[in-house]
Image (cartoon, rainbow, N blue to C red; front, side):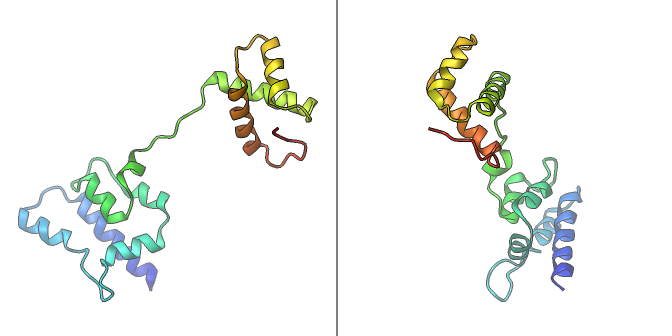
Length: 152
């Protein structure tokens, strides 16, 4: 039964988004589909927030829709900051350093950031110890299944 109710809620949101031409009176009436339920909370918001994950709710937001992004985020319970967020990608130099650090670790798992910094400088890379420590932490997350992986 919850799936049927949720389906109706999602269908009503899609109708709001897809309908292009409306009079101001019809517009107000359709936006009121998010009416108060018995519990006092809004019916649509309550169902969507409890049954869908944040990623699924983010996928429902459309940029070129009749309803503003602000209102869509409000209805779906997602902050606009989350909607506009773009994760940073590591640059190629850091990726190359991570590969070298991992390769060195497989050869000598007892070495720490100081030894690896010296090794990288001998190889011709200009790095400091704090950068190596940060990259080692990231590599530890990637290689958490490795037993020999230590950070000093």
